[in-house]
Image (cartoon, rainbow, N blue to C red):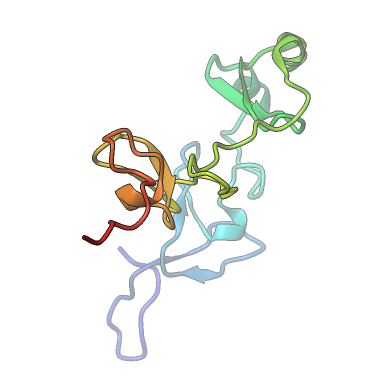
Amino acid sequence: MPDFFDGEGFPLVGAACCYDLCRERDFLPFRCAHCQGLFCLAHSAPQEHACSEWDAEDVAWRGDARALICPICQKGVKYTAGAGAVEAAWSAHEVDCAGRQAEGKQCPAPGCTRQLTASGSVVCPSCRQRVCMKHRFEDMHPCHNGRALQGPPRGR
């Protein structure tokens, strides 16, 4: 049952934050997975509302997979939570770390320096090469179907 009503007595959607020092009324409150209380965004995390059912050590020791992003090469470093797991994952990653960020692919058209991104490139239906939007037509990139980069047709 809703815990607050409008001026005419009709129940309103949402709930008041269960954190005693807040009690803010929220349209879409968050339910805590540990204590089942309803909280506003600011107090939705268990540590933010001093959850009595939340055990920080238990969460840290749980066997779920986690990942960190290497600040040097921007690759994900996967590890399993536990004592010394982060240090072990970094040590294993240091061997494989390139020491610099991986460069993205460039458009294969001669003289083009554009990076091929997911939204700024297309795959040519003829040669199956990924090219930038400027060189998306078959005659604008080195297409392997024999017609690419031949120049304008000759007049007779």
